[in-house]
Amino acid sequence: MDGLDALKAKYLAALGNAQGEAALEEVRLSALGKKGEISALMSTLGKMEPEARKAAGAMLNVVKDEIDSALRAKKAALADAALDERLRSEWLDVTLPGRPRPRGTIHPVSQVMEELTAIFADMGFAVAEGPQVESDWYNFDALNIPPEHPARQEHDTFFMARASDDPRPPHVLRTHTSPVQIRAMMEQGAPIRVIAPGRVYRMDMDQTHAPMFHQVEGLAIDRDISMANLKWTLEEFCRAFFEVPSVELRFRASHFPFTEPSAEVDIRCSWKDGQLKIGEGDSWLEILGSGMVHPKVLASAGVDPTQWQGFAFGMGIDRIAMLKYGIPDLRAFFDSDLRWLRHYGFSALDMPNLPGGLSS
Ligand code: PHE
Image (cartoon, rainbow, N blue to C red):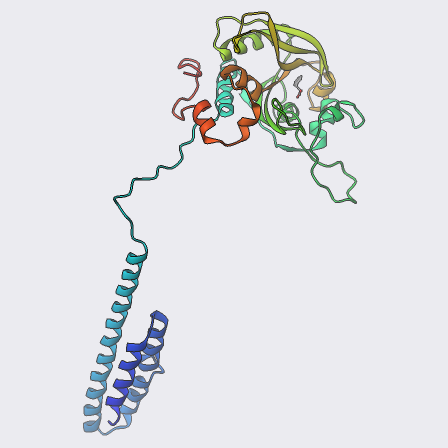
C-alpha cells in the first residue's frame, strides 16, 4: 500500500499543531472516524488478494495504532498544560492572613418579635400572618373604614399600580397589621386568640418614623371578653417584656373605626440623665392603640357579633424595641450598618423564652 508514510506524517503533524480539545477531535475524526481516511483505506482491503490484504492490513494497523497513541499523548499533554495554566493563574499565598466574613447579629426587631411571641404564646396566643400587599377591602372596608372615611387619609397609604382602565380600587401596602384580624377570623372563626407581628408601610420619614416599620396586632374573641381582660393582658405583657417587677398603664379614650370603645395606652416611665426607666417616674409614653372589636368588624369577618366579642390592639414593635434597648434613632434600624448591629444586635444562639430569660 503506497503513501502510508505520507499519510501518517500528515496526521502526526496535524496532531502536533492541534490547539485544544476541539481541534484534536477534528483530527481524530478525519483520520480514524467512520468516514476517516484510514477507515476508507481499511474498506479497500476486502477487494485485495489474500496475500496482499494481509500485508496491507498489517501496515494499516500499525499506522492506525501510531496515530491513535499520538492522539492520546497529545490529549494528555493538553490536559497537563491546562492544569499548569490553572495552577499559575489561581495561585494562593497561604501565608497571607485570613479575611473573616463580616459577622452579623440578630436584629433588635427580630429579637423583640421573638420575645413578644414567647410572651403571648405563654398566654395562649397563636401567631397569624397576612400579606404585605393587601387588598383595599382587608386594609380598610372590612375594618369599618369605608372609601370616604377620613381615617384613610391619615394612613398615608402606598398604593400599588393598576391599569388605568381597571375600575377596581388598587391594592395597598398594608398600613397596619389590623387586616390580619379579618383574615384570621375568616380562617379560624371564633373563639380565637392570635397575635400578628409583621411589616407595615406608611409614607412617613423622620427620627421616629420610617416608611416601613413593624407592628404586632393582638386579637382575642370569645363569649365574655371585656376591657378588663385587655388591661390585664397588656399589663402582663409589659411586665414580662420590659423585665420589670411592675408596670403602670394608662388608658386614654381614643378613636379607631375598628374598635368601640377605643383606648390609647401609655406606660409610666422616667427619664433620668437621658436614661429611660419603665415602671417608675412621672412621664408617660404612648405604646399602643386598642379597644373592643367593633361589631361591624366581627360581622365583616363572618363572626356573629351577637354571640362573640373581644379586644384588639396594635403596637409598634420598633418603638418598644427602642424603649427597651435604649436605641435613639429609628432610621438606624434600616441602615444595615454592621457596626450598629454589633452594638445593638443579639446572639443567634440566644433564643428568647420565658424560663430562660428574654434578653439575657
Ligand atoms: N391599627 C391601629 C394603628 O395602626 C392600631 C390598633 C389596632 C388600634 C387594633 C386598635 C385596635 O394605629
